[in-house]
Length: 299
Image (cartoon, rainbow, N blue to C red; front, side):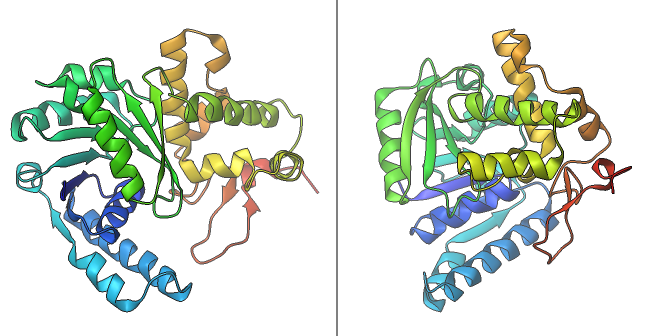
């Protein structure tokens, strides 16, 4: 396995491409938006520069990594020679199903089709392909080049051979893979998203403010960042989409998204990506400032 196709050049996609390329794989990065591809390549270059400053790699390693990545706007061309395709498109069921239908027609029988989905059923995704045994979940954590975990999700029909291959491949990337079964939210988000949702409910019901909630969880539970800041980092739209998958999948009201979260997403306040969520984000600034919505009337 040497040729990897990554579909989607956003935060997760460019991080996955970076990680494979840095470990010697030939990567085809595919996105329908050419501007998004150029932005992704610039982001990868900037992240490699950060690694150089930290002494983790040298200039030769950066050049080698970038030379391993080719960008494509045409899916068929980008996936033509893939041994593995990793889909990292937005967390939307219909978009993913449509992509896997196309990939099933475009790719060879031995090509492994993986999804970086954080919550959508691998079994359902595999059901629209010609060879469900070759479909698996490969859920990386953000930021991909830094985080060690890969949640490997085995669909109902995923073969032992494919599962073992992806577990071994993850280790070759320097990651620590964990195999889990295909249930809504898998493990990571089945546990994480209800915690984030409860933090939002605590804010919504006036139990405490944004900084107070995050401080309790950082200092009291030794979390590296509070749940509201983490929600901003993940993307409030992504959090909402995952909670809806959990709510639909389990039918349990405990997974119902907080109305405050729904309203914020509807208003376009998506966190870091939009510049405004529970906090305000100014390019180049590392200071956390609570969004105006949550400071009105306070001294």
